[in-house]
Image (cartoon, rainbow, N blue to C red; front, side, top):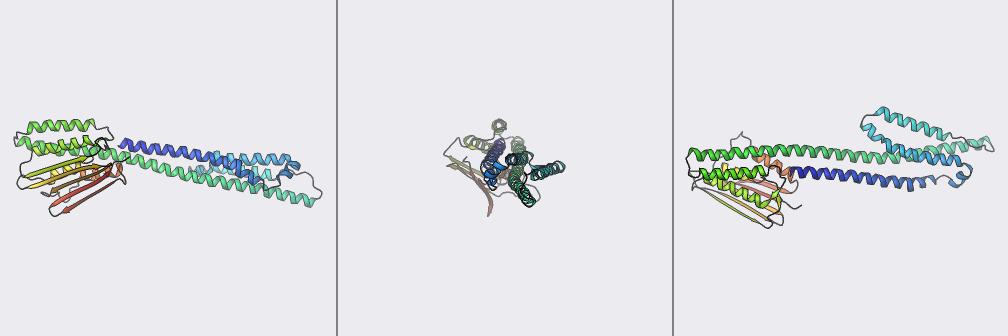
Length: 350
């Protein structure tokens, strides 16, 4: 599941990058083929083409080149990377080119006054176009840069979650083995006739654990079978005072679930809900319908966890649920009288 979780995030990241490139292409086409031609028509194009042909051609080339330089250099990214010298050099060069463009030589005019008016109009036009292209381009690049930062943040978060999930999974298996070996040790020192049977069941459980070590998900029927084997193993060390009831009902035996996601709650019930001297009961129910799993474990409280002892298994399981099934599970624990109840609803639908 952790590999699937990571792959899903990687795929989403790749998909978002491809979408960003596609959107950027559409914006470039929109600006170059629609917006910029409309902006250019703000000047008397027909008149300038006839009387100022060279300047008009130079102006169009300048505007498209300006847009291309902005898009290629990506000034917001340079500032984010603290490449201030390069960014400032690009800005200075563009300002110098724009100034040279605004000083493009004019043909002679009937009077000095008309010449100065035309020169002033041309300077205003060039700088107006410069501001339009600069404002539009920087706005687009800032939006894309912000989107890129968000993607990078999500990618870092996905890597962090992947590492945490691997850690929690690695902690669960030793925790399970420690509890089970304790049970076997109890059978050995009591010379129980069930010792041999218990070791066979334990061997089957180990085989299951390590065959599923690299599996992201498994069929729910296999997880139920594993739980049943664990319960049978625990029952071998118990006497008549502890009654264990386990029931399961599934519509789809092949629906996928994260391996060993439920066993911790059952371990907890056997650890704190059994007694060799007093009557007590453990009730385990698992039902799946329409991809929704309802899981419940009830046990009489026969002993309590020491006040300052951390519940490693339960804490790890809660964290795994948060990482593997965010917004797709609901877990609650409660004490009702002398009974401890765990209820978990898990949405396994894709």
